[in-house]
Structure formats: C-alpha cells, structure tokens
Length: 248
Ligand SMILES: [Zn+2]
Image (cartoon, rainbow, N blue to C red):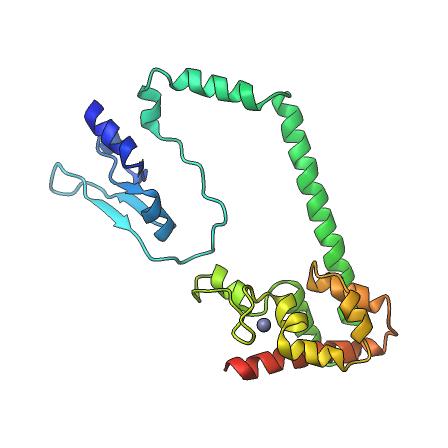
C-alpha cells in the first residue's frame, strides 16, 4: 500500500472523489485517479458510484466532457482523505497555520469580507453611473443595448471567446494585437483609431481612462454636451461594425 501511495505522489495523481454510495469507498475503491493536466482538460468530470444491481460489484461511471460550462479561473482546493493516514499530517497543518496566520482568524475573515464588500460597492457604483449615462443618450434602444453589453463585457471579442473556450487565441484578427478586449476593439484597433481621430471627441478619447468601457462613457459624458453622447455612441457602434465587417 505504501508503494502504491508513493507512486500516486510521484505521478502527482489526485483522487477524483465520487458521488453516490459511501459503502464502496469504505471498501477502499473510490474510483479514479487523475493527473493535473487531465483535470485541467476535463474540469467538469465527475465520478459516480451507481447502485449495485444483480452483482456484488458496484459499477463506477466517469462522466467527462472537454471544456464545457463556465471557465474556472481558480482551481478548487481538494482535501485528499489519504493525507490523514500520514503521521506528519497534523504537524504540517499546525505549522503552516501558525506561519501564515499572524492575526486571529476572525480578524482576517472580517477584513476579507470588508474588502469584497468595498469592491462590490465600487463596481455597483460604476455600473450605476454608466447605466445612467447610457439611458440618457438620445438614440435608438438598439444603440443603448449595444453600449450596455460593451460595459458588461457582453460583446463577442476574442478575449471573451477565448475564456469560453470558443477560440484558441485572444489575438485581434484585425491588427494582430495580443489581446482583443472590448476597449481594444472599440477604441484602440486600426479602424477604431481612424474613426476617433476624425471625430469631434478625438482629444477627449486620447486622454480617456482605459480601465473599462463604463469608465470611458462616464469620462466622455462629463466633458461633452448631452446631445453629443448620441454621436459618441454611434461612433462606438461604427468601430464595432468595421471590426465585424473585416472579420466576417
Ligand atoms: Zn486590433
């Protein structure tokens, strides 16, 4: 058994866990071991212990589809039950805990909650401001909807398609820039630059923040008349239209 555990550690295999009958696990058969690479390729894989039927062996089902579902930016932490069988386990946990936790746990958790709260509040305020600017624009609902999608990251730029495993690269197909974000396609790419250069807001756009589409909208609105915002929105749409015509 020690040799088996050693082989698992050497090959950096992970017990995939299971759903279903606890009894099968108690008998020492949990199902599948997988490498990190395999888990990355099949992030939604599941091991299911099916009910025993006309046999004393329980069938084990491995469900795995390539990609699928939402992109998980951070890998989840899994606790391996067999770690407990190592006599050093308790000491390692205790030592690591002491090394990393110099302040009381409740203080750390409180701080994290406050940070998250603050970030959410900031995002909400930004969204509210952008929302107000967009809906005060004099223009067709289609234009407002387009701008709102831009603010919420809903435009199908390469960055978004890549994160959803639809394309292999985030590269801009118009100018070859490394990442085609919403900001890139509407303000920084070839066509977009040409459009903004000959517009009445050329100066304002060159000084605008590049943090988010919402920030740009709010920034521009603070510097132009309300009636000019319709034109600004239309130019954003024109940049998007040029990009799509080029690609498709
Ligand atoms: Zn580009």
